Image 1 (cartoon, rainbow over the protein chains, first blue to last red):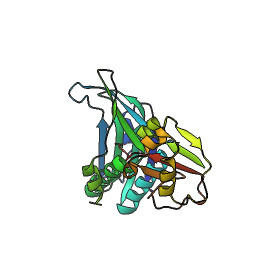
Image 2: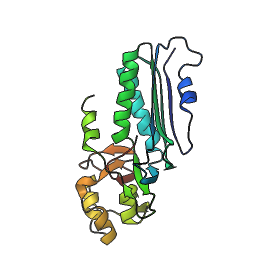
Image 3: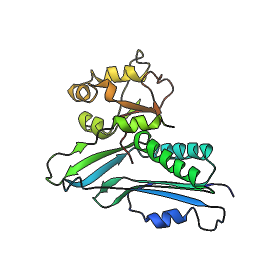
Length: 152
Length: 83
């Protein structure tokens, strides 16, 4: 069977278990399923929400390019890449990546690769909305995130 | 040329997009940034630190030495912070 690829950018929350099942339902060739869910944390009670801005169109296209690169590099049976935008409260999901393969190493590595590239190559920008209601700062890109790309 | 702005670039410019007539001497993304710096104070503030600006031509990420000939739109934004 050919690999399954699901890429979505949406404001709504999602159910990680249901998204992961997209890669296993009806298939018997999957031996490994790695999932990653990124959540909004409250930064020790300081954060009321994150406001996630995105570049409509380019966001979907760029996530698809990154996922297709992973399909070239690893023998995968499927990938799900899902990213939310808009206002996201602490405790809510932001991002989800699932990688399925016959064997675990490809699934682990592909999920890691996807998250590294998604953080600094997909057009999303986080703004912190503080509990105090005053101001709100754009999150700075980290040099460490950029450095992680060099691993691949 | 359609120019689109995102995140703090958008906030500082005060617009999410605008259509501009670029002079013929503007040939690269870096030239566009240099030109935008001179438009008014808001643009000058947004583009003051050119090294902090990233760009996309027709929704594909490019370096600032990329030629703009043939592009329909340019987008400017800070380094991405997804995930």
